Image (tube, rainbow, N blue to C red; front, side, top):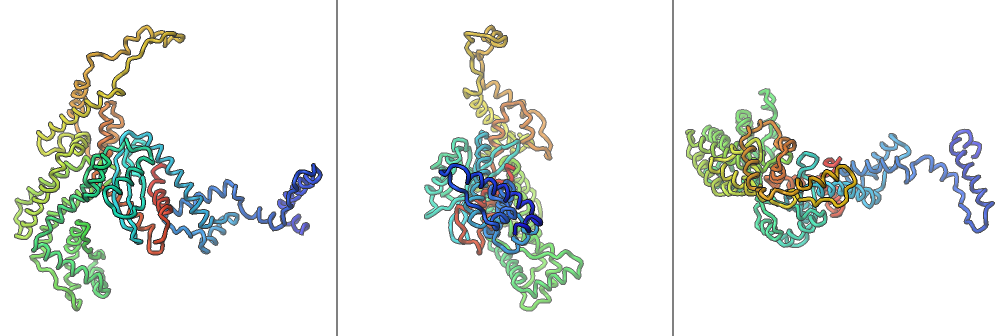
Length: 559
């Protein structure tokens, strides 16, 4: 064996010889020193075949593997899959994938703590924080509450996940408030929260009151309520039900679906599928009607060729769908606009309300049939009932005025714009009146050694604040100068405008422009959660689930 090692594995025999000599010296030493056990040949060969646990290469690859599991939402037992083992061995024979226990008890917690540390640093540096909160029921029938944060970081608007925690028992206002409070306190950012955005559930509103945080109802959810109210017209419901039957027929019949595809192919048309309505999303009704109109001709042929197919829509009903589409399209655009995360969505609410009002006025001038006219009136009433209150919300007013793309143009009337300017002047005056914004006087130095200190000592009176200083005057001047400057172009970024601004007004701008218009960010967390908690993984530990979701959502924000 020794001869074989010399010829085929010289690196091993050299190391063996060195260790053997060292052991011999140890044996010749004092008798009270314990003797080191001589490694077997198998152990020597094994050490050369695989990376040591303390190897930097091993640690680096383990970290990448844990990151892949989190970002790609792979199963925790993936390291035990034979196919992957063989593939990794072919790439690097010296690397052995970590087992499930190492991954869940060591690697994932380490990565979670690393990402959390970066998030805590970012939260420490921010001045104002807004949060969105929503709840979700998992496939295992467990309630999960998600909290996302929204603030400026490295000159951009980010929306990290703060927590996705299991809520046991009743989801009442007190329980929700406790979970939110503990999350914010655990990240030392409770005092920085200026707004909480949730849906219109009373428990969420009450939780915000318990926490004494200003509450903003999710505008996307409010739009959904507007459309739900407007759709409660008997004739409209009959039309929608007829459309739903047609869609259901083609969704459940493979023969009918294949017939439709074949006709679309023969007509050289793009193969489009019908879209089914979902009760919880109003815009699914819009998409269903739009798709039926787009493939009207191919759908008519397919229905005529299929046995037991539901009756097709009449020419009058197709015309009605076109009219309804024109009415719903502005609301669909509005829903998408307020659901964004990477731009100041709150500042868009008042311009959207103005745009919707103008569109509804324009539609009144069009010759509509009776059902479309009823739907239009229902929409107007629902908008007035549910959306008008946003025009009186201070946060919406301030965000619109402080967006250099909108300013006074974002308001319906000149009176509303002037009222917004007065509100901004008042808050800016209070902001400038805070002690840290007023230049403090500096007492003259008693002993000055450097030239600068001697100059400061001589001219100390220059550091004493002007007794006539009036924050109100500065506020009026700054706000007027900002408002009277030309609006920036639509394609420009309002956040970049304020980043280069020298005015203290930009601190208020970042405060309001970082508030989201909807709780969609929290809802998107649940879309990711649904890909992690599948039927095959419904017993995933809540702590592991939180770690995976946290890393998935936040890793790219800070790397």
